Length: 417
Image (cartoon, rainbow, N blue to C red; front, top):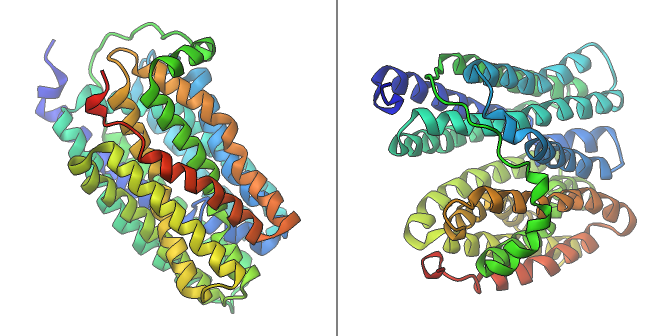
C-alpha cells in the first residue's frame, strides 16, 4: 500500500479541505462566539448574568464529556471524511437555528432557550468531531504540511475573524433596527460562512488504513491520576497553573457587559471593545507561533499568564474607578482575547513533558482534572449578581497572580528526564 502522505492527489485535496474549513471556521465564529457576541445577545434580552457563564460552561462540559466518553471509539469509524462532514453540518446549524427563530418573530427572551439547545447540539457534535478530525489530519498529511495548514487556519482565519467582527459592529450599531433582527442577521451571516466551511470539507479523502481497537476508556484513568501527578512534577505544576488560570479567566465573558451595564459606555464603544477582543484572539495565535519556536512552550505559558493578570488588574481598576474606563477596558479586552488562546501553550507543554507512549494518559488526566473547573464562568455570573463586577475581578486577579508566579517555576521541557 502506498504511503498516503506521498500521494500528491490526496495530499493536495486534504490540504485544501482542511485549510478552507479552518479559515471559514475562525471567520464564521466571529459572529457566534461565546466570549463576545453571545454575552451581548444574552445580556440584551435577560438580566440573569449567570446565563452568560452557563453558555461558556455548556461549551466546555459537553465537549469534554463527549471526548472522554466516546473519543476512543471514534478511531474505528469506517468512512471518516463523511462522518466528519456530517458532524460539521450538525455543529454549524446552531447559529442558523437561532436566526430562524428570531426571524420568525420570537422575542429575544424567548429565543434564549433555543440558543442553549443549539449550543448543546453544536458542542456535542464538536466533541465527536475533534478526535477524528486530527486523526485524519495526522494520517494523510506530512508534519510539514500539517504545520502549514494549521498556520493558514490561524492567520487567514484570524484576519477573517477581525473582518467579521467589524461587520458585526456595523450591524449591531444600527440601533434603528430591532435588536432581534440585528442579532438574527449576525447569526445568519455566521451560519452561512460556517456552512461553506462544512461544504468545503467534502473535498477531503481518506485512504485504506487499519482501524485500531479502542484504547482503554479514559474514565478508567481516574485511578492513575495520583501516580501521574506524583511521577511527573512538571506536568503536575503545569496542570495546577492551568487550573488557576482557568478560574482567573472566569471574568472573560463579562468584559463587554461590564462596559455597557456597569460603566455605562455607549453601544458603539461596546462593539469597539468586541473588535479589540477578537483582535486579541488573533494576536494570541500569532504570539504562540512566534514565542514557542524561540522560547518554547514554557515561554508561551509565562506570557499568557502575565497577560491574563494584566487583563484582570485593568478590569478591576476600571470597575473600581481607578483608571478611565475606555483605556482600561481596551487593555482588558485585548489581553483577555490573547489569554483565551493560552490552552495552546499548555497543550504543547504537556506533550513536551509527557513520556513517550503516555501522552494519551496525560491528556486524559488533564481533561478529567479541568472538567470540574468548566463551571467557573457560571459561578462568575452568580457572583456578579450577588456582589458585583469588582468582586468578581478581584477574585480573578487573586487566581491570576499565583498562576503567573507558578509559570516561572515550570522547568524547561528539555530538562525533564
